[in-house]
Length: 360
Image (cartoon, rainbow, N blue to C red; front, top):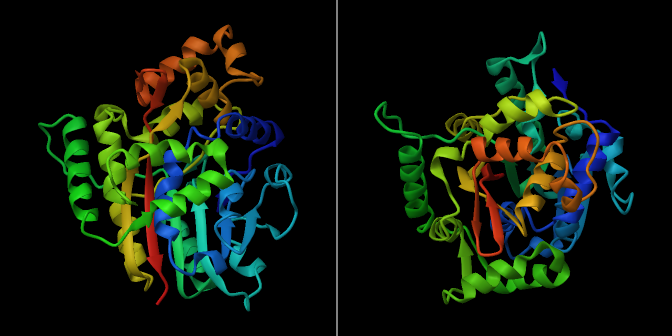
């Protein structure tokens, strides 16, 4: 079994992209807050797996009493502002490295599980990799205290209705309509006052931008259903260009300086695995998590640096405009993801698989 470890240059470029544009991925954070939300959250101990350079950590520190950061890459963890509660371990080892007597109230893992792979001749083996990923998840669950929450977020394959006569856009549209109806009847929501506290703690994440839009619609809570509706109302979703897995397989794997070997879980397979694990109140779904930028140049620069698409870093969006890679990376985005402009804001399509469960 192999877990890909990124080198120093990839870590530096990844960190630079997130530091320059912390607001770009704010849509990924809102569902995490909703799933973690609860009366006891502020008194909780949370383990953040694959914490990297601290993008999610910076907000979690304001939500819970204690965050234990776990990553195997020294290059990633050295970018964090503090060495408090750092654990050097890969995703499979974490259950062996954390004190068994620790009361773990929540575990998060953002965009990392796909790196747990069984590799033969440089390629991830689907069945073997999926089994390894499920075994890894089970080891995390053992760390949770009774009532503890698992929140897993990753690129994944949605459970789309199949019809040979449909283009991809038709099943995607049906998928999100069905999800919106389903989650309008569930308990997964968050009070806007809680988000205001996050806004005040981390203004650079632009959480306030989303609060203002929702307040204008006279709501006092945000739910998974309202997130889907909000994305669709703004017209940010281009359904024929929404499967992020394709972007990884075709672009990141071939053009990133470190390559990208991965196995991406299917929504239906993960749902079955979580139910078999004994977790309660399970939820597994893909959600639109559109990336947001101030200009096209910023969007192109961010994607190039986040995924290290090409040799040598570009220090700013201004430098990106005159760079030889500008049109090439812009072409990747338009072909596999889709990019739209509304007023002074540029949106790049993105989609993540969210999984949740509580230990009985």
